[in-house]
Image (cartoon, rainbow, N blue to C red):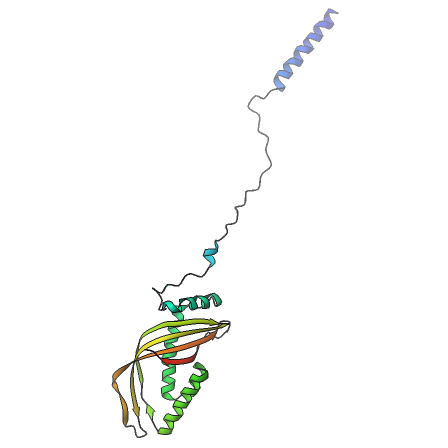
Length: 216
């Protein structure tokens, strides 16, 4: 019996020893690996509406009168590719081309650049000139100014009126070549209001002259 009691006590002491060792952390155990987490995706950054809106047009850096500003804004909203400076460059070129075609009596060239009553008026003036036997020997010396005086959007038609201040040397000769009016040595200041039109959805980027008037 004594031996049995001693063996039981030894077994109890061994069990307590194992529990004291296995039942606590020593601080040297490897941490349990956690499953890898997917990196957080950055939240999409939205652009404010103001960044997407057309940039304001300032009369300080473009040749637009205050009265034409609202109309220009309407045209820009209807045609995102419209550019004021590029338009005025084209208007200057058209002014020169149309005048020179009229002076030459080139109705074919005018037919591409003008429309409506303007084309009829030019054709009539050319016919009258030919009937009188007169020849024009005019020269556009310079375009001093080209500015937008008025603008509007009629449905899908953009309409812009440009004021041209230019110097023109003009000579009219008779059938024999004699000068009957004007002088090439003296340039005459001219002030015109030309109105151009274009459909905002047209593939053709060219504007057509639809009205002419004399500016004050």
